[in-house]
Image (cartoon, rainbow, N blue to C red; front, side):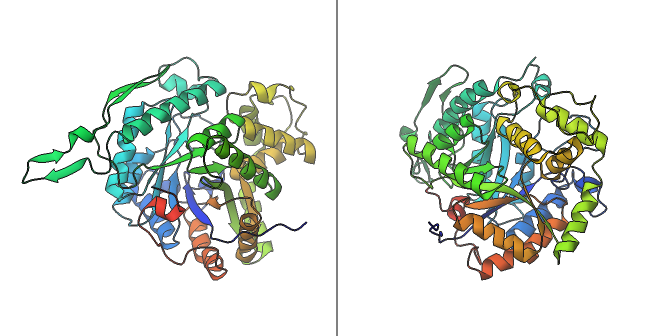
Length: 437
């Protein structure tokens, strides 16, 4: 039985990470590594995204330094960077990552409402729970909370943030100079929340923002992550390696939306996609091989050991991934779904540790494409039309060049085929994504 192809247009996010998503991309001669801690680097990337009519630019946030062979470390605060970008752009959505585990609800509510105001309604909060004990230690804690507990805490955290945003109504701010009424304070809704982990009593000191609420993004594919997405998310970022798995995930999130009393399709599913583009397939393959050679055997062993939380230092990088303890994923306190995905890949394809490491470090578990712009457009349209996604989070392997190449070579193809906008049709991120205010 043939699938009913979807109508409509793709959504696109630009995921900016160091000098590129390839683990060794910062080492490439074309990378902008020397500018990673300078504002003009991010402003130019944002202008490129806006020129490409992207829905949003998305910045990750890591709360630790993990000294590692060949790895980039250190990261500017995303809300600070996005606030500066807001003044240099006019339409582009601005998505910043903030951890619920190492923040306070009032601070997050205020920061994101402020970003929404100064950008004219283009802010989004990417909600994460963090991953590592290294983060806990930086915040004076001995251990990172368990995976399930973090999601319970995140649900409570997000409830408090939403209530704070809603403490101001659409018409609460009056600015009535003649009558001397700054606001109709009788309309304020006091937050009186006392939960197990978080609480708030009072009002946010930022009026209701242009979008009503900033867009909520959730990144995580575990069962707890999907349940969280069903309750709260406007957008879901995910890592999927095949159209079939992407379709299953899209359906599963739809089920969670229905359980939460929301309409299917009310959250946009956007898998990560890291494109290595060439004018021919052979050219793209050469570029891919060039990047992969920058990942050493020692680097692969170290990173995979850390990722699966199992010491592989006694194994040669050329050996197959050994059979790991059966309960390894269940005991993982990090990205459970991502760990399972890579263990399955290694065993099914009988990959060596080096091969697995190079696949993982090439795009950190997200879909990697190697080929021409035309074939990339074919893949993106197929995934959209056949129910695998609502769009993609584009993850250039080397920045800034690979992103400019995507905007110049792939976006026009998607536009010609009627699968991407020719121009922005609204002013806010909710407008771009087709979300209700």
